Length: 122
Image 1 (cartoon, helix red, strand yellow):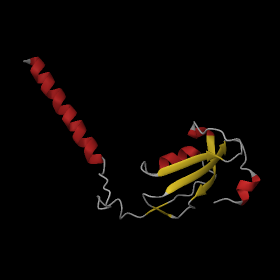
Image 2 (spheres, rainbow, N blue to C red; image 1 turned 60 degrees about the vertical axis):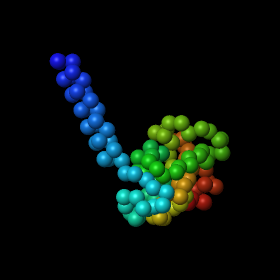
Image 3 (cartoon, rainbow, N blue to C red; image 1 turned 90 degrees about the horizontal axis):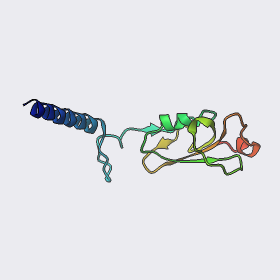
Image 4 (tube, rainbow, N blue to C red; image 1 turned 30 degrees about the horizontal axis):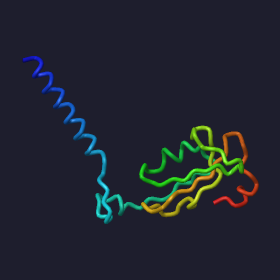
């Protein structure tokens, strides 16, 4: 009797967890007739000079992101907390939709942005 009650309670908790998780996620549709996400106007924040970690925390998880090293050394960007933003495209304030890819140029923390990059900041 106790085992059946424990199994029933466990199943009930699992079902509640699934219900809460699915309620938090908004369904996406190809046609753009979802739950209002497409009608909500989003803009690109200003990331210049900030740490790369801020980019990941401030952009929606569905936003396409291209991160690359602009120092000229072609290094892999592995730990976001060790990099700072030198360039961004599109510029801050631009409209952000599902087709937009945000491109971020970074250097290691403590390094300065190369002069050619600073003059062409986007």
